[in-house]
Image (tube, rainbow, N blue to C red; front, side, top):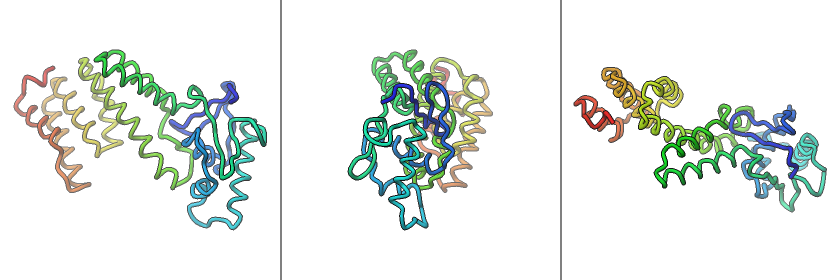
Length: 256
């Protein structure tokens, strides 16, 4: 592929050539590119593009219109209309070929793999460094400027989940390293954004307790309990309950 192109989906969809942003003003072009990027290296059938381009009121000439959007995307990327290039036509669809270092999602996944290797080697500093590096690739909510409900329903949840799991791991290492006070503000923001994610609540409870704020840690559990009851009709899970009991009893094991 052209070595000067870079694709980013870990935030608003962006394309850069030689460091300069490539304009993609058409919402339909962004939907096409996002679909192709999420299946980079695999053929995307025209029918799948149509599904993401039009949730309803599919035009009678949908296939021809989708093909026209692909042609315009090729021009925007500076690609040849046919033949060699990053975006190629196949019998039933289109194939986007992206080198790993030129796609932020692939880079994110590769760095997480390094973090996993460090974790298996019990090298916590290296694991933390890789997690910080991976998370630094995120610029906001994934594909936030791509207006396709079907694409967002199918793809955004797993993208979000991969970031949140990496965040949980990095925060856990921070807590193990004694950075309790530094994580409290970050965790308070995270529980406001993801109020049903218990792991962030338990990490906040532990950080508060280790920062000599037992009353605030217990209050965090009460807020978690109320949130889950109000939203889901559920109680906190076993991990949160055990931590709550340990905080109440000032369990000495929580100090480390």
